[in-house]
Image (tube, one colour):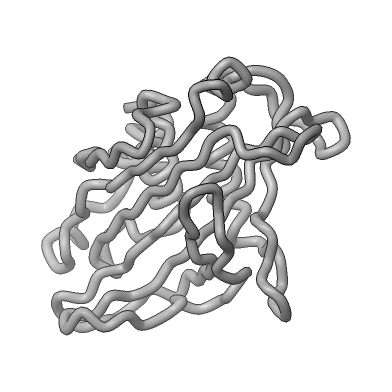
Length: 205
């Protein structure tokens, strides 16, 4: 686990953990083509919001927390973050956060919508975000789905795609945006680029 994530976890208040659902493992799936691997983990990359669905607003202050977490992970892999004009690759970030009720019904997005469901390279990851988390009945879980597509700017071709899903009780410290983003992004890029089409589970302490 990286030092930033460890320091966040250590600083989290522990009292809430006893009254809300514990964190699940992070379920991660990655896709790539063999001939694209040589282009990954190098050069300048621009971290962007994924294209918004028709009639919806692209980007928000809240999504910047997750984009920043993705940018930190990409830097560890060998990328240098840049503006769009200087980038050879673009990392498109999709996000969905919603409450899963004990009955199995989905309620959400949590509060502030920031995009729509868009098709990806081999999968679609919905977009929607909000951070008014308080309350919730026993057994409810806050689900975060993070998807990243890395594209080559010159061809617009997809080089890599990954998605991660994580759930935790709404009152748990890891439901908060900064800690949540670190956990999910860390898992998504663990052992990058990952096995083609392989789904793994990354345990959360």
